[in-house]
Length: 480
Image (cartoon, rainbow, N blue to C red; front, side):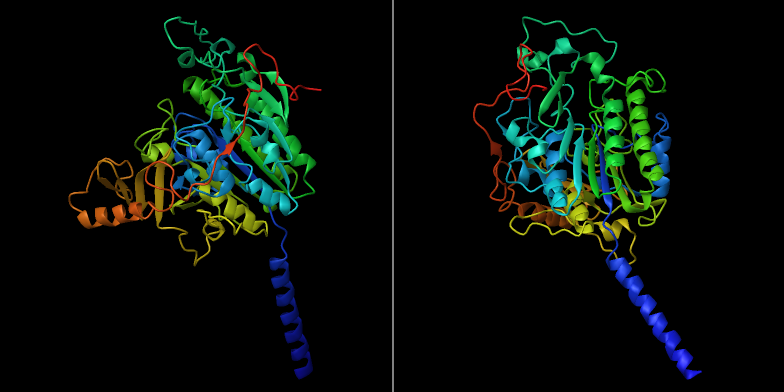
């Protein structure tokens, strides 16, 4: 009897050991990051929309976890730099606003991106959609760790008005005005190039814009399918729902919210098709999907209950509707209000992939996987957050308190998420604490201008647009 007991005990210990080894040796997941352009906080059902129908995102939230204090940047390029590098935008891409076609600066080739780090772990990497971190050869995503690229190198409004990029679907094209500067009319911008890797596939005109969401989605499904037996990282940054609004033909006039609602509902369809592909291929239990927006919505969007819009450091400018999905890992139907953001994408993905974070440079993000998984002892990865608009620090947050520095306005976000009740006068100690937190950045990123912790921009000589104003494709970038 005693012998059988010992044998059973030994077997139990062996099984526990094997289970522990299985957990340790569990295959790293696939990653899909879906980044929408200019989506408002309350533009989707999980975050309160009653106008736009988003059944696929509703399901994603029901099966995943909403991140309700997830921060990006006020505008496009800085936000994307943060996602790629795990840093505050100003550290990796110290620019005052966004990058434009033909700029001679961009994300430095010396920056280490999430794609490069995942590629080191054997991942197939692809970006499908909007890059916006530089359109010169040295700055393209194929030089920053991505095996393949299909999409626009910047925003879909950055081109000549005659091509339809300054007007929505159905609107008459703006006519040149001799009394208005060319730059203000978009006449100074070259045509939009749709690229595959480092080849310009075509010049994008108005009708082409109506096909972008569907083409990106087809490319995403193809990439997932072709790499189903490998580990993969898919970065899917849609140009939608940025102005100009060009929803696909199947969605035009179908929403209750005009062209904008049509675009949001098409974007939801795209998310659904990607998630359905993951499910159908049997990859759901080993694929982490993050859905977010690059900044807050514009006035055409709905940011309720947040104050402000894109390009501001009010919550409505930087807090984005974010959902994390990984069946069996991320608890279904849950929410976290912990302070998280684009800066956490790189550390989280690379850690989950079994990779090593760079030690030769400062990162501002952290691994938020324990928080995503709802681990009982998971602690917030930060108490403070810095709100930069370009090169200027405009606000800081600590816990639920947020201070706008210029006017000294203090808001308690837990009880006043809309930043409507300035309580600075009654909380001078809190104001002093937050000003001290802001002052701590003087010797790092700086309060305004370039601080000592800002890394150099990438810079090239003789920068040229990918398509010149006469419609000629830059030499070396022509389709073969």
